[in-house]
Image 1 (cartoon, rainbow, N blue to C red):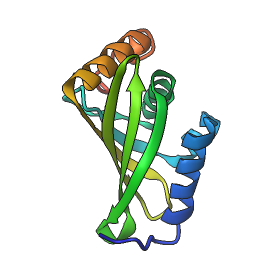
Image 2: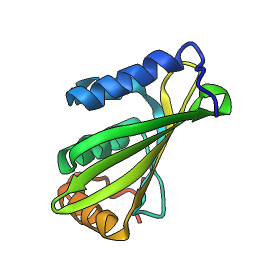
Image 3: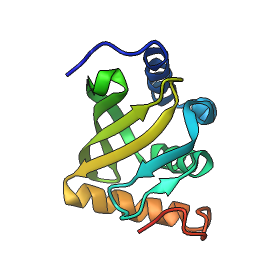
Image 4: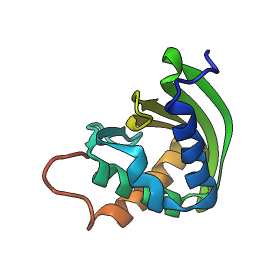
Length: 144
């Protein structure tokens, strides 16, 4: 694992942590590449594009309670970061990993989430589905 980041990635990662810690999601779109790809633990096809990914991330932080990152690992010359987290959805506790890839400009180009246990993922997927049903594009830009 690598703990040295390229010049643009370190401040971008600090900004990501600031956004998450503060709940100030207004700054989120500036951190996303326009063609960012989001891979959900509950959907087969990836979601694409900054507006869609920003909507998903804003929504998930409204669903989670007690969210906190516990560990951080870097690889791929510092462009790839794995952030281990814990959170709660209703009465279900879960653990997960955010796999984030940054570009040379410090923008997020890929964001993949893995979650366990299955009961925690099911609770998250159900609540996200309810909250996003009316807001997600029906043009095939993502989903199951």
